[in-house]
Image (cartoon, rainbow, N blue to C red; front, side):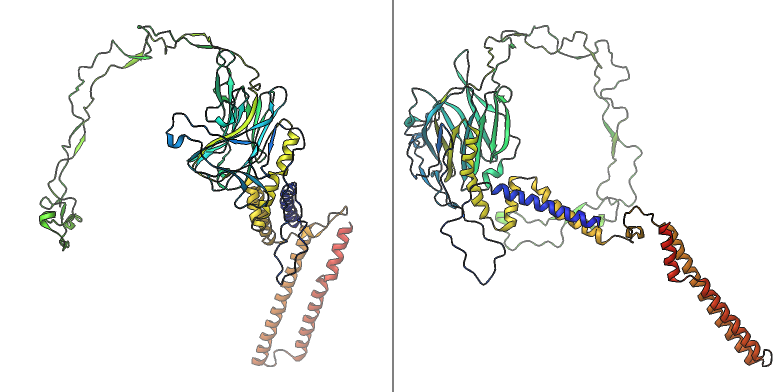
Length: 600
């Protein structure tokens, strides 16, 4: 019973996990198609109920935002394509002439859902839009979020965005790679290098110059996000306490602090090495030196060779001095197309001499070489500790003239526009649902109304339950452990349950307060009954044997025993049988004994 109980509990647990996963996917806005009437009956029943049809509704911000764009109007209204040229580039490729379009995804599951699509490959693209109102870094967090779908995969290129710095000189038509930005965020890939950028430009409070600060690389494997051709949600969160988070599909893949996890660090060191300091000429950095008092021993022979002939070596018997180790292949034939004028004189290839296989060796025998016991090599004085060792020289430390301490790097340059300045070897990169906001509730609801709906539609289009489970495991790898437990553990329990050994008699009794009979006493009584039955069988067989002997004796010697004696012997035997039957306890008596023992 315990095995069955465990089996049921495991199956219930697995069902609950999968049900919870389905519930998570159903949190997004799913709307039954109003035009979809009851399904028409078909001859063949479907193996599983059809997924609900998802009707797309353009997301609408539920609170104040600095920027929100879903592109569902079908136009580039508010966006300006750059007409600039890259500096330090050939004229043919310097122009930002890559095309942008607003359209649905090629394999869309949500008709009516449109986005910004990078259409050209191997070209420079630049497009930007002003924020509804600038964002100033004060006491509110910053949320940056948007969606990307690499519809054709990605060979080499980026899909990051730039939050452009607020400036009087900002002209979106002249937006190019050197336009000042405050934050750069998003995916980038070339070859097998999968990156997720978070870069911000920090202003040096002493010099006023800007320096790029890069967040540490994520420990998460990002490859699947670039290759699965699904829509993924990228989110950057910056908090006034200098902490930051980078999320993909609402899961944290990188986090840290602006003061501790950026390269190069925000604040320079207080001290630096003196660039004018030079190592003294007499500075001794040698930890070991040759012993100046050491003398080469008189018997040290530097000219003794490392190898000498073995004087004790003897040529093995049967050595074939006159036989070469290799001979020409006797079975080889010159090719018919061999041209001696062009190819030279033909020679058969060399093969091992078969006569040498049974001999210790062939060819001229030479005395082998051995290590020379007198070889010592060139003498060198032993090394000793250097009494003048001063350690490894380092320049002295001086105060850093450029030192400053910025304890609030969150207070970056205000942003006034959002832009995409990209070059890619892959076309049809889909962007959608940009939002810049300071309210987490608004951002999360925007994500559920946009990306969440896409994920639900893509999940409902998966091929059956197995496909949905595989997709869920890709997003949450820990589900593989649950799947293994759901499949393997029940099988193991069934095997154990079915293949158990002899059943314990004590397991038949229920757990009650009443005393139970000792199992060992019952087993002893059963063994005694078996012994008595065996003894009774032996006595019966002996009696039959004696009767046959007596009959044979009576036939051979008539008159030795009378008829009356035979009848008396038979009566005695019958009495013994009856007596043995009385001594043997019946099944009812055994049951009475058990009942009395349990009562006691």
